[in-house]
Length: 309
Image 1 (cartoon, rainbow, N blue to C red):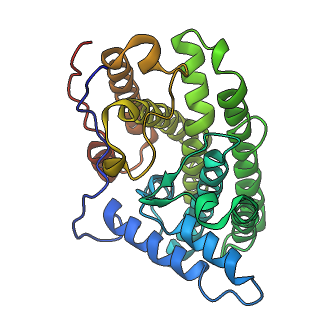
Image 2 (spheres, rainbow, N blue to C red; image 1 turned 180 degrees about the horizontal axis):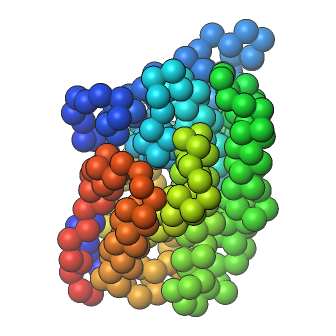
């Protein structure tokens, strides 16, 4: 097995204001807790399953990304935070489904048993549906956001989830991996499974901030490269990190085609570094305050040179 020291830092923390990634993550955690507490009329078992899946330990990268790109004024912070929570609900729903026995058959997620292990497959599927529908309800009701903008955000998130986004990526992952033979095909899958929701979160932040089209396009390029790098790093960790370190199952990819399995950890790390460099270039072009986003990337990605096979 190829060894690697690549890692995603799960536990960094420091104090800072609301423009700092750590403080945004803390605000997201607090708001998510509020959104799934004391829900009248929701069956207790379903509510517990939703909380189990949503509130487990997580980096919350997507809502943090949305918030930092939006750079909201004080009176906009609540709506932007809620938009980020909606994206996190979509992401969590995708994880519940990805972990099912008919998909990856995973046992551990976010430092706890997967939702179907803890609550059964039927309740897990219902929890995923509940999170998806709640996410769009949150977008529809964003306080102080014009209707036209809310409709645009909803359509954007719908496209990211649907048959040209996360759903397409999952179908290829389950039934089309054998046809992936090159870097382009694998990175397209990485885009669908991970990058597409990164881009949606970033573009939603750009829309909420009122950016012009050129800046929005730069933000999308940034997030696409960031997302593909993130998935590549995750593939490296699948062979190099322990279950305890990641809080989820490892070596689940088996013989699946990834950059690591096809070309080795060294080439995968090089690809990751190239995408991060392109992400940084697009970040500069976007005109967004780059410092907190660069800090986020530096904290998430630790990519020393891999040992050769």
